[in-house]
Image (cartoon, rainbow, N blue to C red; front, side):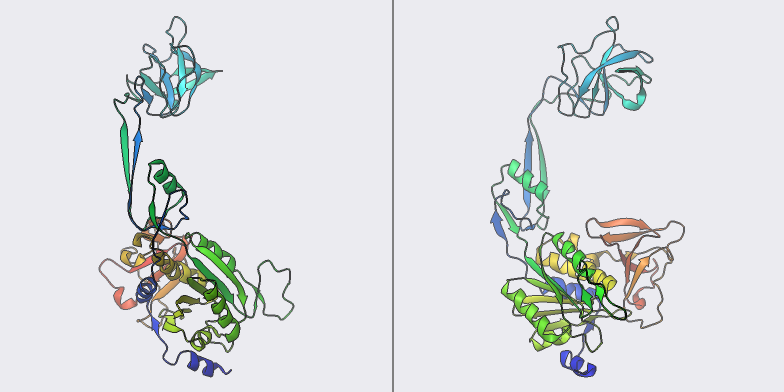
Length: 435
């Protein structure tokens, strides 16, 4: 099929949108997973649909002080410069083992215990010497260099049971730690949005499997599929179930067959990587239109173009992403990942980077590429050309969301159209450092 024919069929009215509109559509058009109730022990992961308050009760431990830091439990009367024998070690929540009077006086030779934070102190101990304030002078022997004041490094006995309360908001990821806390505190049921299956396939006649023993011959245009392996891991890290559809030929029928397989396997979302260029063999968009998909948009408005289309067919959400490894990584991290997390009911704090557009640094401007002022700019690579003298910018990263970075770190900076960049505070943008 001629190049102009298949593109006119696929998209008679091309629609390209900016990053903010793409983020809004992708995170609102998908249907959020319905919550289900599980016991903490049986919950499959996913994200909390309702807030959970966990109350832990700790019984009192009266009759003995505890160590508030790591060090040596000292007896009353010991002075700076004196030496003592280390009688033993007490771990956190542990008790000293030995005779009831575990600390002896100077006449019998000073005896001390090596204690960790939280350990019960031996009878008679009235302070804890910092490790750095003593020196080892022989086997099981120390010398006191700087004597702490009485009571220093200790915690008084509790007079009653203590309680700790922790509130986990809706949208919090249900990991093993949270399941254990819920079970230990007596919670019998959790409302959870469980994981769903995400299909993915790489599209390209030139692709061969990364583990394939076949080596491309002279003049052949085959290349290894380096996108599929990391994509599978990235999907799994979101508490979702990745389902690989393998490498797909870049033609209409195989792509249509992959969509049918995904639908039959009750896959909720499908990612197709590749076949989004303007060559005569790039057929992903054509396949979607021929299959009767509703196409919300077919590209991103940024420098150099972008391969990203969002479509729906028979209840299946499909994200078609350009196959260039760097382009695919950027689009997945910045747009596909939020779309999947929003559908799973994850907190907006984990994916909505649109709320944290901030100045990169006073006086710093977005990179100039000499093209349309109406296009966003995605600038991959190190930020060192714009960050001089150790200036810091704020960054967004999937696991921690916001943190500071300095020049030289790599990722992609996303800049709005240049018309909105000139502000009194400097250029606004988001720097994303991939996981």
